[in-house]
Image (cartoon, rainbow, N blue to C red; front, side, top):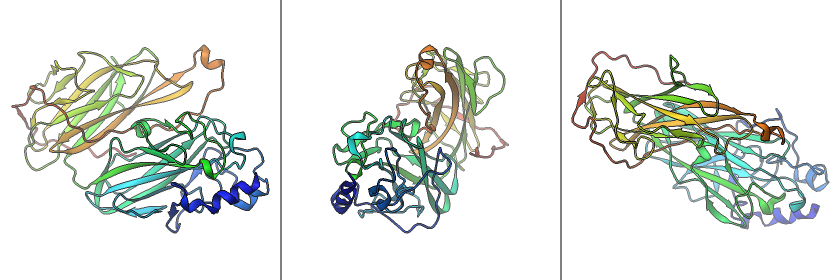
Length: 408
């Protein structure tokens, strides 16, 4: 099979994925669950030094150069196949495409199929002049079984990133380009070769790439803070440990940071799989409803709710309850990340809170526990329908002390 690598590499420029090149590398920011995996040249692989090992993105002189640098970015208007490997300059309004390269380095094709292959991205949710996007690649039978790399987006002005919903794609020589779930940000999504079944044979003819898009926003119009607690407990946290069957309470704090009154503030929450919204549990608190008022419509986790109008530094709290269920929990530790967003005049602000759940039932003890990939979710600008609640009110809290943005 040694000749396969040379033959495939020779026609790399003609392949959908394989023609991609990276700009010169200045800083290396990759890693893996082994704390530093073995690396190989193409000559090493052709000489049989990889043996029967299944490993990903470990060839130092492959199609994209050093495969450990497998996450890159470019502006969506850039029609070339050259990716910025470590950093890219952006400005307000830019749409950036981020690429994650996927290559099972074994030269033995279908005799060494990687199983359980999945990928996900971690997107910062803070406001800053520089943000690091991390891409993760996972496989249950590869050595190591988790890989990551990063790319930085830099600007002369403070900005935040909005994931473009529906932009996640996977491309390879068999399927062409197929859509991936928005859970590429919310949780790892399964990849594959002939279909999205987690199976990718070894060698270049089976490689592929994941792409997503993010939009750059420089304007900061609101503060949004998301917290969680076990139902009935005191105090709010960014994450909480819970068991299957527990009910947890989420709180969304909104503050108007603009210099003028804003109308029709929409709040929406995106619940991950394994958290179910408890009907009729949404309550709104603001200066008009200091003791809280129940929101009749159960649309917070679908189309969203309209919480009314807010003056400068006006604020509100939205609380609701969710139940931890087991629809697709992996054996071992699970991070269920819950996102909230506020939308005012098409400007979106987001924040998240996490529920940590451990599954260790009898079925889990019967089989090895697969690796649990890091889970970082998504949400974005969404068209939502208004409800009547508070639509005519103006809420202003004089002297409100704006808390600092959450640091991650």
